Amino acid sequence: MVGRYISFPLRAKRRIIFPLSEFQNEGVFHQSPVYLIIAEAKIKAVTDVCPHLGCQVNYHRDQEKFVCPCHGSTFDGRGHYLSGPARTDLRSLSWTRTNDQIEVSQK
Ligand code: FES
Image (cartoon, rainbow, N blue to C red; front, top):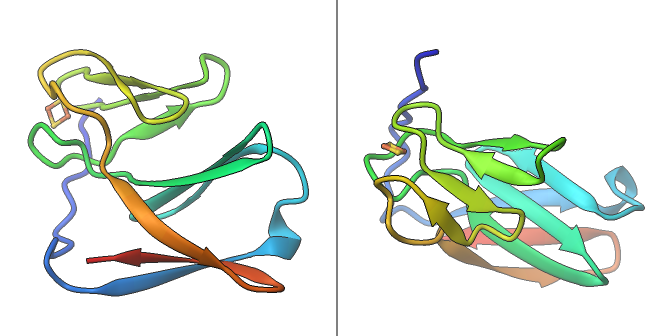
């Protein structure tokens, strides 16, 4: 399988909106280039850009982990580094919650 390289400029500021109506339960939600992780009443946002060479990581629901299709780096369900050449966690992103949405900012 060939991974998808994305050309998102890391220094540009961008906001990704997740409407709360789309996720009433826990889980991992994706709007490229952001994964929103909701587990145990906690919310975390991470980038989907692999810290190794920038491929887009995929979430494998059955294994509850992120896997990079390019060189096989893996990350646990919270984005923490497990194995492979990446060597660091998926980058955490700041987010804010309003009444009906979660807004993730990428700087
Ligand atoms: S780009 Fe993800 S492991 Fe190399």
